[in-house]
Image (cartoon, rainbow, N blue to C red; front, side, top):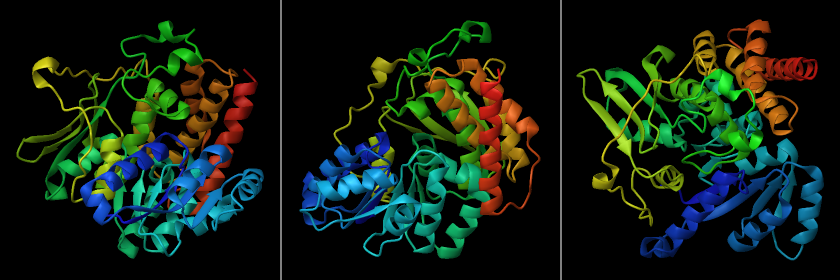
Amino acid sequence: MSEKIVILGATGSIGTQALEVIRTYNASEEGKKKPLRVTGLAANASVEELEKQIREFRPRLTAMYSEEAAADLRTRIKDLNVKVLSGMEGLEELSSMREADTVLTAVVGMIGIRPTIAAIKAGKDIALSNKETLVAAGDIIMPLVKEYGVKLLPVDSEHSAIFQCLNGERRERIDEVLLTASGGPFRGRKREELTAVTKEDALKHPNWSMGAKITIDSATLVNKGLEVIEAMHLFGVPAEQIRVVVQPKSIIHSMVRFADGSVMAQMGQPDMKLPIAYAFTTPDRMVLPSEPLDFAALQEIRFEAPDTETFRALPLAYEAAKTRGTMPAVFNAANEEAVAMFLKDQIRFLEITELIEAAVSHHRVKQQASLEDIFAAEEEARAFVRLKGQGK
């Protein structure tokens, strides 16, 4: 169980829910005896929100990725004995601080890679919510996890479900990982029906409350593609043994089929606080005020195959997973850049996948890639997508 926690991305969706989990636990009888302590908080530029969190949780260290935001925060909390760091160096120092045993990486994008590596090398367990860390650099991260003997605890609902299904099981007995997907807001629609969808349409996820970027990723099924690559690294199975199935109500969070034909599933309400709490307290479970599943009211659970003709990003992700090297980083970076352009109304919805496809087709893969190779491939993909997107 974690006792002293650093949260990277504290003002985002996962970060704020993690703080809710900590409040709930610390208010319980068990938490009053042995509370969870927040020793570090980091955000990008949300100064006002981070100030509120600092005044409530009183961490020893904080960090703002934005230098300007860090200067503002220092002025705001000058009455407190809290050191404010900034930039990537600040995130790395915060992640490796002595007064922490677990680092929750809830930042969005490849910015999470270097702080995660710093935390691993400092012997910290990682509660991983940042998909891009393993997608782009899984071949570097997983050997480091083994070398430094730390735990990598998945926070995504799907990977947490698989993690729980594998508790006490032998990994070599996995026949297939069944990664569930809600299908997003456009499930059932064909490509011609998506030509005129707006940003507002794409941001209406049917089940989950998430940040804008992740919600768009769900609408394109890129999110599920990233999860396939992440699962490949987390659980040591090839992409061919990971199958995506659509389960629209998000009640079954993922499943594992074993060599004897049996299937284990983890079920629950679609609430991100459940996997966050499990990452903090595993192998124990925290008491949470969550609504129990009413199976009589549920009546049925439906499954569908994903429509890979309409949502072409999913097969592109499988190809990136099989190719490995720098290709997953290019897939991810191209998507990040394309989604940013879509959210600024610079491209249409379907162009997100078209730009990803163009970027991965253009890229010359480097195998056995170093961290520098990965970041170089990322920059190349971003530049390509910007140029291609603006020249449409």
